[in-house]
Length: 99
Image 1 (cartoon, rainbow, N blue to C red):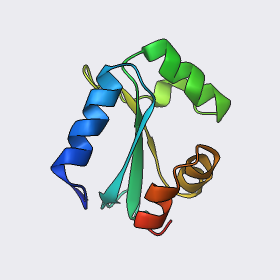
Image 2: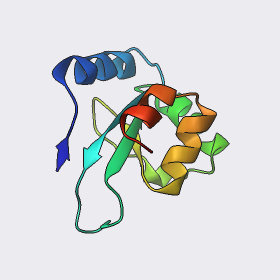
Image 3: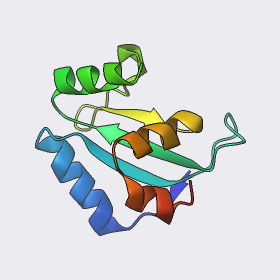
Image 4: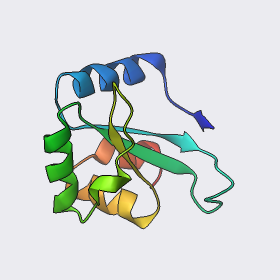
């Protein structure tokens, strides 16, 4: 279950992804499979090759991409989420979600 995100932020993420930009979207998240995680960051890009190459920089495997037809993305959570957000200078999301 996702929450803690507003419609304009989601709309901007979708636009950026569809324009072939690497785009980050963090929101609160509850999933019984991951009881210690309270947030997830979706890193999307409609340019599949660009997304794969981006993920390889951080050791992310291509098969981890969620193959949404319009918004392919990696789901980041836990320690790797914060590490990548820091390396990508996504300070606003780190601060907003207290990562």
